[in-house]
Length: 127
Image (cartoon, rainbow, N blue to C red):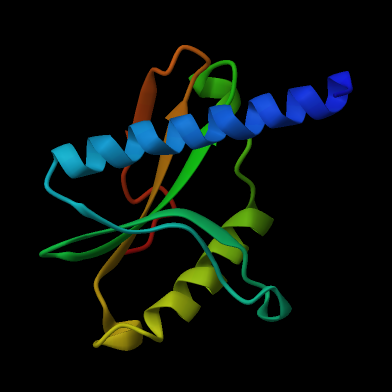
């Protein structure tokens, strides 16, 4: 296995580990993980949502960002990715009983190299 491939595989598994850690935190707080790595239809501008959690109040779409530091992780989310997450969320909501009227929130979970994390609730300013 070449070095680039090994690095990508290591980053992939580190991302899965970060998502698992964040999922466990939401579950500890009473949420149910409804979906992991849910993909919307890319032809409609959608992308992947790392975690979709549910509680009595509605759904929380969670974007997990991992980097060397919390600050670096925060820098990794831009407007284009947010637009893809919104498009994916809209597609996901089409399958919910209340559709687009479902109560939702968009959180960002920032994870550093040591596994420490910070969750920013309602990070996109909607919900």
